[in-house]
Image (cartoon, rainbow, N blue to C red):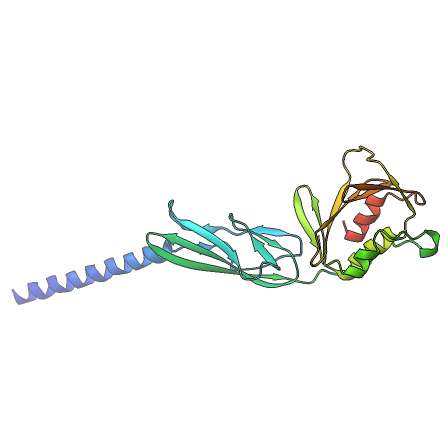
Length: 229
C-alpha cells in the first residue's frame, strides 16, 4: 500500500513539472519580439520594423531616442535622416503588461561622390540669389523620388549645388506653367525652409521664377548628378 502511495506521489510531481515546463515554453513562445533588433540604414532610406507575436488588442507606441538621426512612424517605419546611431523603441501594452522592445540603428556617413559637374566659373555671370544660403549654412537638402523622401547632409555636396546655381546668369520670369520637374527643400538653421523647383531651363525659389540665359545644360539633370541619382 505504501509503495502505491509513493508511486502516485511521484506521478503527480512529474505531471506538475511537465505542466510547468509547457506553460513556461508557451509563455516564452508567445512573448512579443521585433522583426529586427540591429540594422544599418543609409541616409535617406527607410525600413519597416514589425512587432511579432502580439495579441489582437495589443497597443504599440513607437519612439526614437535620437529623432534628428532616425525617426519612426506610428506604423514602425524607421527613416534615416542623418549619420549616427539611434535606438527605436516599441512599447507594447497587452493583458495589463508593458513590454519595451528595442532596435539599434546605425546610419553611416554617406560615401563622397566623385562626380562633380561644376562648370568653369568664368563662363557664367554670377547671380546673388544663393549668396545668403551659401553663407548662412544650409544644413540639409531634402527631396522626393517616387513619393520616397531623401535627405543630403554632406556639406561639400550642398555647397557644390548652391555654387553651381549661383554661377548661372538668370532673369526673372513668370510661371512657365510646365508640369513635372524636380524640387529641393533647403533646411537652414533658425530660418524657414526654402523650396527650389527645377525645370529644364528654369528654376523657382519659393514661388519666384528665373530663366537661365547662359546655359544649354538641363539643370534638373545637373542637380541630380550632384545628388548622385
